[in-house]
Image 1 (cartoon, rainbow, N blue to C red):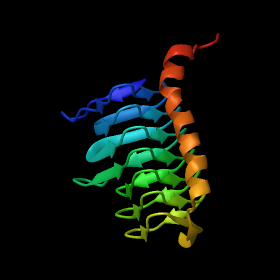
Image 2 (cartoon, rainbow, N blue to C red):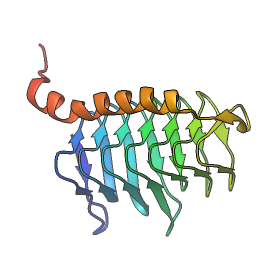
Image 3 (cartoon, rainbow, N blue to C red):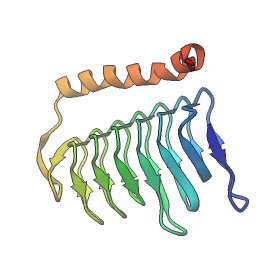
Length: 174
């Protein structure tokens, strides 16, 4: 796996965190307890800083970065879907960022908010707690309900189980 310090900036991994061998973590990155980082994900704290909370899933090919001297913050129990980009943004606890979505500079995705696949949350946009946002640019189209929260809580624990399951059962085939 590609875990690198850069100019004295060192990644910190929480207990139980799993980083897939094909993922890259560089510089001032703090990963909380039981964070799962999938294949091809790139988390760069080379001149900015990245903080990812406990029990978050960073799925395949995500890119997480921050501007110089700035910080990208991803909360606890967050799902970052395949191929999404988070750049100097904030994603609060329990949020879901859909596949291929972009969270741009200084944007915020609230607690339990959901950003749809391919959506673009533009610079300095705020997606309120428990809102559903879709489109380019992302616009709020609804509210997250209890059924959605229950369904996604189950999905999130499934991804979280990958930390131990991948560590114990992943084997390269020749």
